[in-house]
Length: 196
Image (tube, rainbow, N blue to C red):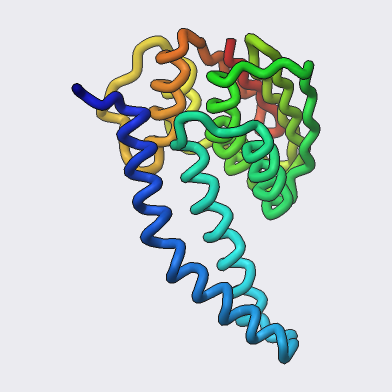
């Protein structure tokens, strides 16, 4: 029986996460040992910040590509990423969350936070049938073709590369649950994205 793309990606990411967890954990242990002798060294602070971001991204990618993420996990990791990127998050939920939509929140929030280069405010509204993201910040910059890949009806697969693969995957996930993505980059300080 053939394996669908989402299942295949979930298994692959679980394998990669497992293989990287041990060396990353060793780096984290080394940083904890260094904390026993506090230092104001810029090198130490850069190392610690890089480790925290690497650890978070590894967990985030595993969550993004998992088939049925729990909303509590999504909520926690999105909050942690936003904090590292100086983005203030506002969550609005109606208490009823579709499992298929929950799976779309993590990659959508990740792409949005990465576009907010100087931080800002991101509002995530989640209901049974729709996800809405609204952002404001001093400098918002989407990668080339990302909004077209997310929202345009027809997109060439030639645009798929390491910088755009997550947008293509989010598009595929949305289409697989019969959802449409509508993107509006209002200016360099605001954008909104709706999946419904």
